[in-house]
Amino acid sequence: MKKIICALLAMTMVLLCAGCGESKTGGTAPSGIYYDITGIAPDETLMEVDGNPISAELYFYWTTYNCSSIDYQLLTAYNYYGSYSDLVSEDGTSLVWSGELADGKTLSEFAREQSEDTIKFYSTIETMAKEYDISLTDEDKAAIKDSHAAAVEDLGSEEAFEKYLYQLGLTQEAFDRISSAAYLFDGMTDLVLEEGSPLYLAEEDYNEYGVYADHILLATVDPTTGTAIPSDQIAAKLDTANDLLKQLRASDDPETLFAQLADEYSEDTGRETNPTGYIYTPGTMVEIFEDTAAALEPGEISDIIQSDYGYHIILRKDLTEGLKEYPEQKRALAEQHLQSLIELEMADVEVTYSEKLDDFDAGTFYSDYLDRMGQLAPDETAEGEDSSAGDTTGNTAGNTTGSNGATDNTGSTNK
Image (cartoon, rainbow, N blue to C red; front, top):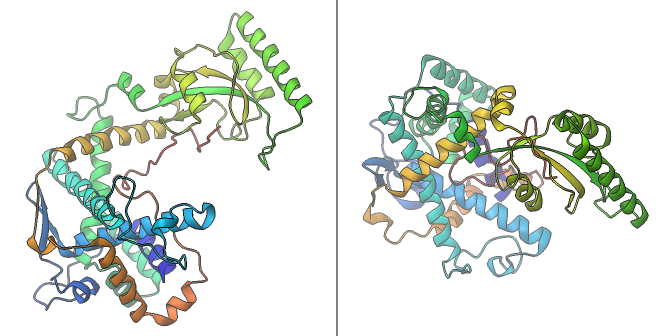
């Protein structure tokens, strides 16, 4: 069943833009999977973020989403590495939501905090969009309509789509609201890139969010197995690195020579797709690579450094020039900047809660949700246990940005 839940919730993010038409909830009695579990009407306000009301269905949806993400990540870590054993049941199939984390907080409390941070993030997008007069364009609305049609086609029918929404615990109106946030975020990103706009990020300020660097890697490990090559070969690689560095130091045009030598000698498996280097955000590359590149000025070449991958010679490049060549990476960094602005706004929002959340336990709620899903689809549960789970990791605040770490030219690397 958990694999079905993971795939179901992951599909939501794939189909976030698959908005629907008119809401079908008006004038009807309360219903829905979350109402069946909690007895709280879907449209009842459970939380307000700077006066922006958050309905029960949205609150419970994001709780389910984040609990599913935590469930997937911790059980994956446990099954592969034996981590978090004190937070996993004896049979290894579920989490102990009452278990305590290192800071004394229970896993359930952590899940609730993560869920409410996600809610605040999306609510702040809506508030900021209003502040900067960003709304859905006709193009956005057309894209939503097309995505909805594609979602119905993928699921087989409108009836299947309605069932899908029920399993998510969302009405069409709530689904539309979630879908719209991605477009509002994109609209504000356009302002970050638009010179003269109130959100404009000056060219020189992109250096706060990204680094542009190329390198020559002489690998000391087998790229397939990750095991060390023989010591005599490692020694030969170091000799080659010293020779290359000597050539670069003696050159009148070291940047041009660097590109030539990198093309000829570098054993970075990502060079084919990143022929001029990497535009990356901090925390993406190995630490010694990032620290060395950060200490260089644009156009400066490092001494030889050694990482777990081998010997590197690094060239720090001009990010502004790189972003002219790769505008899609400029947008990715603009999204990073916008996300940081949203997080700053989040820190100051005023949040109020309904008294119905006084005793709310996220872990217990999620367990009840899993039980309810099992009752609804016992046959699908058995079938789903053999299928692959969708990826629901890393979705707490910022999953509208499409930028989760590396922002290299055409794909990420950690070398």
